[in-house]
Length: 120
Image (tube, rainbow, N blue to C red; front, side):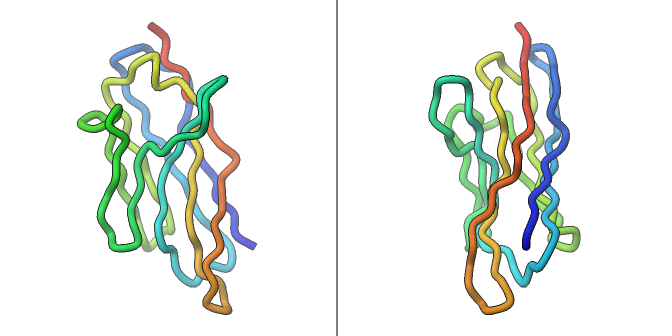
């Protein structure tokens, strides 16, 4: 079984910064694409930033220039540095990863989510 555990959320004033972490553990034989999604109250879950299987990055237009995704492959950890936060960034942030198992199959996992609240 694989677990994704997010941390680093919290309450911050507009213009502030937060750094989210997502640590993957368990029976991991490789990680394909990995990234961050968020869901605000009453809205659909949306992509924030991700590494593709080819290693490139995708960002939502709303966070380009403010958020940076990074990863430490040795630690199976992905980060999201969030700067210049805005109230509209308030949401539950979820880590998502496609993980290769012992049999060579890829399975997608979600973390439990971490709340980010930006006050105006």
